[in-house]
Image (tube, rainbow, N blue to C red):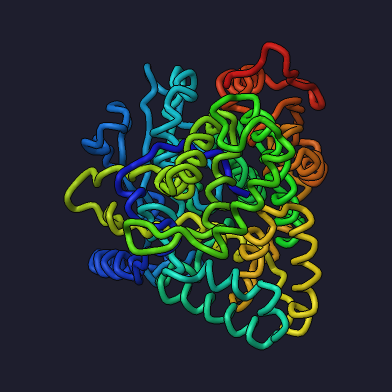
Amino acid sequence: MLAKLSVRPSARHRAVRPSVRRCAATGAVGLALLGTGLAATGRADADLDRFYDQKIKWAACGTASELPRDLQCGSITVPLDYARPEKGALALALARYRASDDPRGSVLMNFGGPGSSGVLGLAHGRKDFLDLTDDYDVVSFDPRGVGRSSPVSCGADATNEALEATDGEEMSDPRETLRQLREVAAECAENSGPVLAHIGTVNVARDLDVMRHVLGDSKLNYLGFSYGTRLGAVYAAQFPDKVGRMALDGVDTLTAPLAEQGLASARGQQTALENFLTWCTSELTCPFGQDAREARDQVVELVDSLDENPVPTDFGYAFTGQDLAGAIGQGLYTKELWPMLQRALAQLMEDGDTRGVEALATGGMTLPAPHRADDPLVEEEDVPLDNLPAALMAVNCADDPDRPAAGRLTRDLERLRTAYEKASPVFGRYRLAQVVLCYGRPKGTDYIRERVKDLDTPRMLLVGTRGDPATPYRWTVETAERLGPSAVVLDNRGEGHTGYGSSDCVHRKIDDFLLYGSLPRSGSSCGTEGDDRI
């Protein structure tokens, strides 16, 4: 599931198509450099102590004007393969806000995706986390394969090839469909380097434990959003005796197959789109006019027309309807982005200007500049602009053990395509393409489905939002039942993806838990009246 993104337009992201920049093997370069340096130390490669005993060198993140001056950046190294630490290491980018006084420890955060940069999420969500700095250093990171941490990429044409493979005409020849999907998987492997084989939540949870120790914490205090809730649950299963105060907001499923997850997302985004259009058509500036029903038809027509006749841009590529579906989807995750989405759609419809929707599609933000000259992380300009969707698919596929055989997949494609387009005429094809991209990749782990349950940990706070377009409220209930008595559920009777940034009540309950250990009664709720932070 994709989490809420803080979107800020940038010149760099306006100038390049979000899914087409090819950046071959940047992860391979970083791994080669790090592997050389570690081999020279003479330490026992089979021993994880060298990773747990390292120190972080914190420094200013850089001179980028949009970054808070009090944000500090650093990095750590973690094993590429925990089963064989001698194979090499990865550098992970970290960022933090220092506690206002002597800290009692750290709170680690993950903003979801999978594929969202934790460094950027922390930088641009600064005001939301200031209360936590009363007692804690607030820390986030770019997980392996994301941002500056050995970013994965699928290259220029992977998304378009997957969309072609699931098109009705292509599905008349199943062999051609499967050939195209295998080619996409091969392009992702070629462009991503060695990290792709070691991506996934099980490994990131182990990285979390290295961070916990390096930060000096005996227990992990953690706040995870959307996919970050899956990460928190997996950590709790792997390291139950290291769990401190853990809050999970916008709870992800631990059991649903990717095909079911994609359908839920398509339905949720369609509902969010209809809510957006109801708001938009109440404004005179709405580019679709003042009739919500007609506006829904216009959006479908706009996506279809751009697929048939993509809009040329000043940068040498054509902007398609599926590019637009991805951009609209990003703009729907929180009401805070609705005005920006409205302006971006008006620019596109009235002037043929794609810059606004491109900024939404990419997250619209630049990465922090390197904080020191010898930093082994990937340079800012070398992070592929398809990194977010490429990382999302890499992690979701690594976490999912289902790999239907060729015959089963070809039989299911037409049924899935019909179901997805029924769920959403705007987002259906886009979501289906993300699901079938797992074909041709190695089978994922069964650890999450089989082992992340019946946890013996301190109590954890799980927040579900009734009107969440990405993580349905029922997933919160199902995951809480699966985790067992340690799960305490807070019912947020509001709208939008996650509650911490939109509900004063949710924000207060989570902060009270992290700061003071105060938990609400399981099943209690946050209402909507007088509780809107947007």
